[in-house]
Amino acid sequence: MINFQTEISLSKYSGLYDLIIPKNHILRRLSEEIDFSKIEDELIKKYCLDNGRNAIPPMRLIKYLVLKEMYTLSDVDLVERSMYDMSFKFFLGLTPEDEVIHPSSLTKFRKLRLKDTNIPTELVNLSVGYAIKKSLIKTGTIIVDSTHTKSQFNLKSQREILIESCKNLRKAVYHIDESYKDRMPAKVTSGIYEDQIEYAIKLTRLIRSDEEIIKNPTVMEALNYVEEVLADNQEHIERSKDSDARVGHKTADTSFFGYKTHLALTPERILTAFTITSGEKPDGKELEGLIAMTENVGVKVDSVVGDSAYSEKDNLEMAKERKIKLVSRLSESVTHSPNKNSPNFTFNKDAGMYVCKAGHMSIKKTITGKKKREKTGSAAVRTYFFDVEKCRLCPHREGCYKEGSKTKSFSVTLMSTIHSEQKTYQETEEFKTLAKERYKIEAKNSELKHGHGYDVASGRGLFGMELQGAFTIFAANMKRIFALLGD
Image (cartoon, rainbow, N blue to C red; front, top):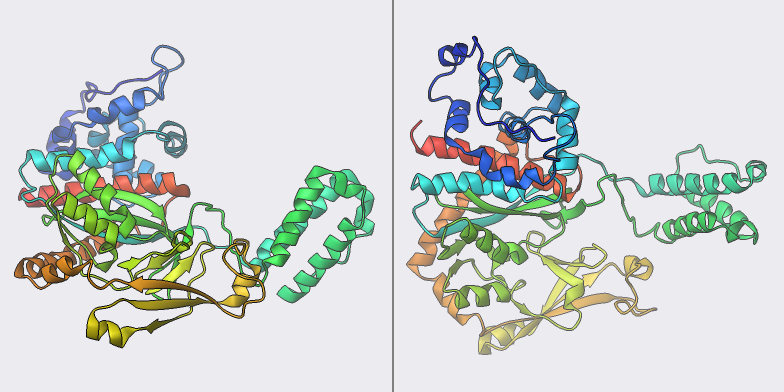
């Protein structure tokens, strides 16, 4: 049964709060000026209103999570500090003598109550709405960019995947016939990847030769998986406990395993919108969503400042149609004419290379027709080449790689005239002035990572990352808002 929390319970010790906590303390201001009940409707549907024992007030648990991101604490450290920190107890709506929750309650709350709710968006909107109420957002300009967050789970090496898949195959066989233990090939103890491959080959041949045991669906499924891993051993497919995380590239030579947070920031350095994607997703595709989220909270967007990743053709057309100034310098590789295979390839602007459907990045690029293009304004063609050894073993090779080919390439036509208006706009003083605002979002990204621990994911999965992003942004926004108010 849900227990609503509206005010601090009466206690003879409540006067301590007035003595200890200053009037301008950030937690006192949050408690007194921010109406957290606005997001309570999203939580009510997750509780039974008239049956069962009383639950911890959901707003109190939301506030626990706000404190967690505001002070960069683990669940255990957060609960421990709330035992003795009077500012924490005041913000949580507890009396000085009240007991605190068990850390496991926060884990259950995140998994059972917050999933499939709109709480992340509502929480960010709460902070932006307060900024609008205080007349802090004065323009319709937003600055957009993405920042990466590493998964807390490491990728498994190909050898580890092969060992685990062989182990699962043996278990499936033993469940049917334990006598197989005496027939299995000797396990590998050398730690050498090639030896593990040889063992896996012997194991699969042994099982495959037994027509009776492979009739069992569980054995067959495990056998197929080992054989697939063997087939992919040169492709270096990597897996992790964090199944939603992906490898993304910052440059052609550096990569990360995790997520991207796409952000919209006002010139006053207040974050108005965010979306979470896996690490390999391009930045430009998220622009329209960031604009929509910003306008839904009450900021009418009239100009967008971003790097060249946002200057793709669809964004230019959308901005022109909506009369939004897009302050994003054109990139030849982003503003191209797609061919029939383009959905299978995405451009990574940081690395300056294309990434195929399987996640492999091109290894080199060439351009033809460049001199003619510079002289006459006609189109040129840029070709990206991929590692053909990976293509031969790729699970997506059908329809993409022609068997026996010695090379695999993907070509794009560089536009010459369709972006003439944007090219002209790039040379104006207005463009140059607005472009100078872009450094602010780089500084905000650094603040999120170094001031709020946003460089590493605190949980797993896209929803866990979305929760972390929302509470981090709320904390960062409120700190910035109170700073702008001069407190």
